[in-house]
Amino acid sequence: MADLSIDLGRGLKLRNPVMTASGTFGYGEEYESLTDINSLGGIIVKGTTLNHREGNPYPRMAETPSGMLNAVGLQNKGVDYFINEIYPRIRHYDTNIIVNVSGAAVPDYVEVARRLLPLEGIPAVEVNISCPNVKQGGMAFGTTCEGAAQVTAAVREVWDRHLMVKLSPNVTDIASIAKAVEDAGADSVSLVNTFLGMAVDVERRRPVLSTVTGGLSGPCIRPIAVRMVWQVSNAVSIPVVGLGGIAGGRDAMEFILAGASAVEIGTANFVEPDVTERTVRWIDDYCHRHDISTLRELIGAVSR
Image (cartoon, rainbow, N blue to C red; front, side):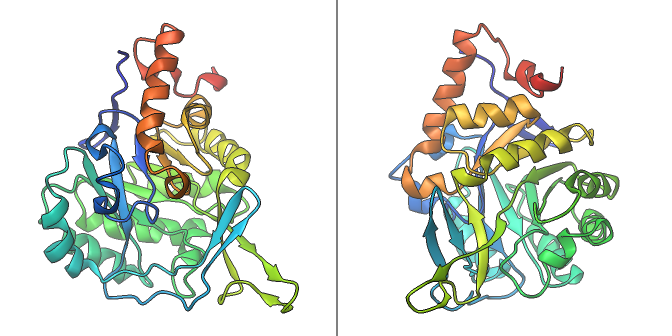
């Protein structure tokens, strides 16, 4: 078996490069009977905010060719609920539990991170500055270098463990934003989040989603996501975590060869609940077939 372990820095070590994307795997509990969670490099739990959020009105999801639109709106019960109710139930997982953090203002991000700090079993947070479904915060922070750096620097002041920042693809120059985030103290960047999209009900002559627009994910976005990962990996010196339309090992390997040190699988979890576990096996088999002793040899190979 090849060495699939990846060290993302500042204490975040993965047994393999495969993680779950926030918002597609719940808190892990929902998938316990469907896949071996402990076989993964990590799970990134659903977006967590300072206070309870109801999310957006229905309808807030729609199927599209080779993907889906969602406008859930970060529905969750808040960070204190996670700390007191959820974390005690999942802390036994033998894998990295990473919390995705969202906010409507910089102090929100900071306070969520501060409250999570006493949980020693949380090795990292993924700061979401890129969600296109929330009318306040999120999108605004992630679309400028200044806004992205501001949130990153503020969280860095209170969070002394691994700080991953999730980038929006809905920008003109994602490499510049990644560099700004790196300079502000991020230990890694994850990309891409969903693309802003829209669907119309032609019979009703109205938008399908209650919010009009939503986040597009699934295989349809993968080639664009791979290109962005390649661009960012050549612009920053910190590790890049790739996501966007990964539905198996071959897709994951595209991201790794393009420059990703690790990957997240999202929408595919809804279709095949064991896709992450299967992806780990495919990557190991690929390394065996190509006589690769350590996965690190393959990271960014297309640029060498």
